[in-house]
Length: 146
Length: 238
Image (tube, rainbow over all chains, first blue to last red; front, side, top):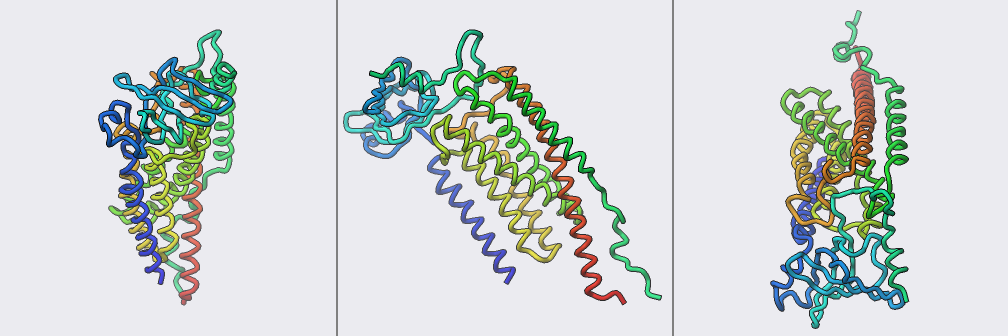
């Protein structure tokens, strides 16, 4: 009786482990593609669910606070891709920040994002004297409002 | 005249006792290092005061690794020498390690929601850390299911020794694979204002962890002694 429960527990453990490793994780070992990699796929990359990662190209952010329409360009230094997203972005979203967007490339070559994530680097810096810590998204909304 | 009982006399009459004051001191030190680092470190350039979650999240992750290392060492030692005490140390470290692993995950989620915009993603770092938690949980579940002491010790030592493989995988995941989670920070990528806080909190949490592992081990010893005594009584000393 006890022995059966042990075996059942081990089977469940092995199953969960296997699922995570080969089902959940394998798909995500390359968690996102860079613009260069996604563009290299050509038409194979259009219309399929994919994650795109890179840096928000400085100066590319356009945010309409009324329609919550957010447009920006993601770059990997080599290639870049226009992204359209809706909804308020995460607090740390801003020019020059790392981002990962989930969605698919539309017919027009614009990446239609259903989910926007900010990717932080491993650097933690205090603001220099006289500089304020950014409270990014508040200022983003204020600055680009109507 | 029956001879006095044998089996229990081989063990020390009074098992080692960690003073509860060590626990009080450990908690106080941790409270002090938290208060110090929270009050002295400036708001971070990108994420403001959110950065302060680092002072528990990162040390908790380090101590999770360390706890599993203790499980590994004492599991191997048990498999080699077969001493009951080694099994109990490994089990105690696994309980404390599982708690710290859970703390790491929960704090990471609380940090991720405002910083990344999501509570959870299935990237290699987060997934492998969850797998580590499941290995801890599986190890403890296995112990709960097996009645025979020797069998339990042997099986769980095998799980503890093999499961430790995942620790370097968790650590290296952000270097081997592309993830949402950032790679480890180092003094080069961390302002000195944050480095100090991280270090002292790591030491404080180490102190707390050592206390709990010791205490849990001592309790496990007492439980085991009580079980042996009950067994001896049930068998009916002549």
